[in-house]
Image (tube, rainbow, N blue to C red; front, top):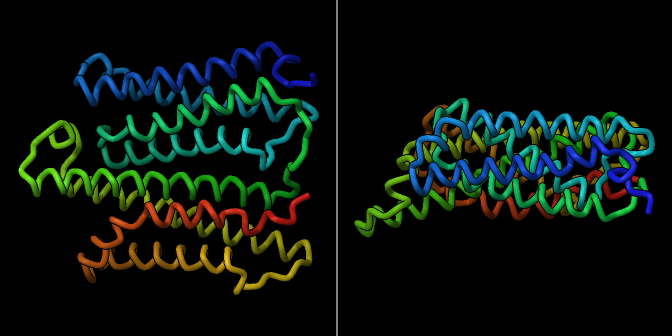
Length: 277
């Protein structure tokens, strides 16, 4: 079988190491969250940064080899989702100084990367479905970053609701003890929303530019594109409302809805790639 990993020992080793690093990082974040182990607290962030760096090196080596390109296949998208989820979370952690929610994000990223590593070692390198052009490359990467930010926003909204329910019922259990307070969760959600809005904007712009360069006609009434534009407008509106403090209740409503937005974007992120050879 023509498999790129079996033809390159360093790449095969990196493939396994990246998955092990994700699992180890998840373990440290979980140990800190559930058991408050100080060793885990001290070393989890450096290990997370090492995981991201190793993953970038792995993808760099993977795509530098002749005959292999990142494609729209499930295997490639899952490893990209794992990386963008982790980078997005790392950005949020650094900017908000809050590290109590990392286990939930990194665990999902670890699962995606583990599956991708297993499938990459099993599937032949066919080169089918690769993208062409800088515009499509930017569109793909931006759309996955947007997907990841919306997924994180959806996760934070769930945690917000769970914590709010515990406080409302006077149940001071593990989530109340370990999670940041509601105000911090709202701040975390806002960072994820802002990150998602930025990359949704890049996704739309890069997709439109690539379609115009290829001479294809874009219809704003196309359901997936229309849905994506509506989501983009909702994100922009929520950021505007929060920034200018025009209505806290409107933003509070938005906190509870990113899960729905994540579902819609998951269905519509490929609006510009349907005609990719």
